Length: 482
Image (cartoon, rainbow, N blue to C red; front, side, top):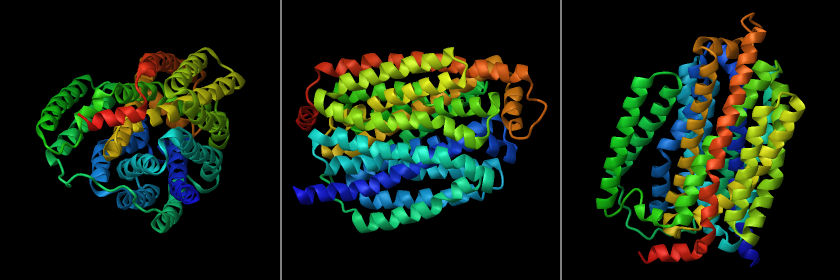
């Protein structure tokens, strides 16, 4: 028992460090976005792509990572991801223009795909199923600690050293994690399949995800015709992908996974949750810096109540899920999140915003760990890599959709060029920042919160509908018998 607990702590020490780093990275970019945009002369589209490039890189490679982990093991791929993540952070910090920065962020997203998928997979391999939600909650909290530290120090780093250092500081952290992982992580998962790679499936899925994400993005910036063409291409690629997977003996994605409603309902709930939540921190950062005129350092501090609330309720959500079951806890979390987003639509004062921001952290904390546990335990061990990847894909697609819904909301009230000028001029003191312009931007941001609230509420039926499902272990056993 003691040896098993020690092994869990060793793998947790690595996964929590990685989650800390990825959380740190996520919030650094959000707080630094207006400063980066101003320094590189980026417009609204390029500014959003500094964040979205990471999501695109992470999403298109996810399924490949998950399947390779199921075929070849977890640890070597995990260490490769850490190396890619650190080197691309160095490239981002040295970027001479917005194009190089976006490409660097895309590469960092590829490294992040290895990390986001395999941390959950490794923990699921090591931890007993009856306590998985609790340990996942602890692991998820490390992401929030990283985000909290990122919010707290990013503004001061930018003010004191410049925005480039928010990327450069990630290199030594990545190096330490790589050395620690090499010393502590051992693969206990033994592949059960002959390693046959479905190249056609991976190619079609990558084409599907790339066309989908680019199509969603272009629609957000008013390129309707090109957007529809990309969305049509994504549908064709998805159709061909499904046909290929049904005929392939060793598919990239075993479609039988979706026969389990515990799995499918969890993926749909995750997707809708991500659409509802994804843009919220970016919108708050823009609201505080552009509309309210606060500095990057103060903005970082003002977003910390969300992270603090998630720290507490992320662990509590996992613990309660192990006691009473995941559908109730995750559904309550979604309801609280929807209410808090609607409340952000109705308020103006910073104090009230901080209050509902904290409530949002409570709701999302209660949702994430139970829902993740339900997804991972609904599949057998030889499908956990793919299951974790699909969970991350659903989050990333929702995140991208959320950002572009926010862009549509903003450009519905403010012309695109004016919105770009407002964001960049917030760091230069330009006279373009008129009171009417900032008021319109503030109204547009609030409208985005209203839309997000509705989408978040739509996830509740999919979460609560799993109440009558069999236990996760039974689902995995049933899958093996298919």
